Amino acid sequence: MIHVLIERKIADGMETTYEAAAKDTLHQAYHAEGFINGETFYNMQQPNHRYVLSKWRSILDWKRWQSSDARKGTMNKLNPILDGGEKITLLEN
Image (cartoon, rainbow, N blue to C red; front, side):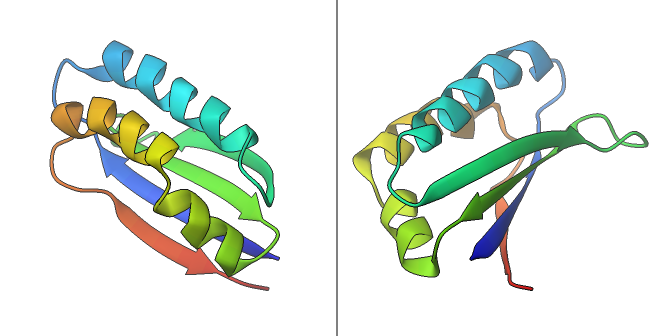
């Protein structure tokens, strides 16, 4: 089992738009093979910094989702409202 931590910085004034797009992305992930669960967080000191922590059965499942057409489609909605790219960290315990 692995965890995937995704860090994103939202462009100023795009918080509401981000919330809707991020919710859609997580909803799509729920249908991906190997997805176990996911949570979203925001940095209390920097509210435009958001985090998604998801749990996957394996790194192969994550990589399959990461390169899927479904994720690419949702990222096409997210990328224009981000201030820079997302940072992805793979974690294992």
